[in-house]
Image (cartoon, rainbow, N blue to C red):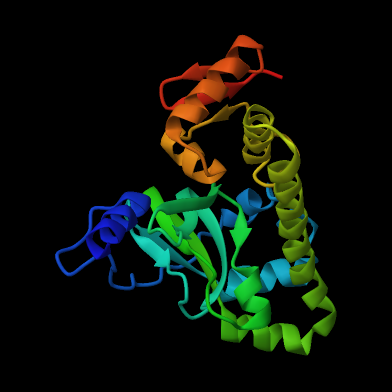
Length: 248
């Protein structure tokens, strides 16, 4: 059982682990690029935050670079700050009770995350693992909480970010209980295209493998492939190598 779980863990992280295991040494923080602010504004939450909060997120934050398969944080780890993906991708997930990998979400650039652990101070709820060369803006928790406590009205902005994620979670739970796989998959692809609600204009192409989609939907790869082909026949999407194009 241990050997099987270790195999599944490696499969989820899609990593090239070091000899001592999948954990990687903490990379040195890097300065925040001056031009980053404009790119961050492509996210609806950051764009509508008061200028004072935008300023402090950039002033307190630092960049962290990750190689493919490297862990940003692990389930049960200490909450070290609010994060925003700025390049690459991140798989958010964990292992289920049977030791099989489960994928909660796939994040793309300028999506913010980590607000739950920032607010309640409890350990991380999932693993975050890099897809390709990845960069993350990390705003240290202690410094940000100290600033927010001195500007308590702006805690509301973090609650707004958390509520956006909660609304998405409720919608996914409702779909799981009420809809067949084909319809659930179509809605999940639309959700991914909109960055889980972080962007107003959806993307028309999604670079995500069918195995990752299967883990996300909690079904087999064969089931996802069948549902995707049915959606393609209906003219909802077009399948490309390693990419899905949304047509409607």
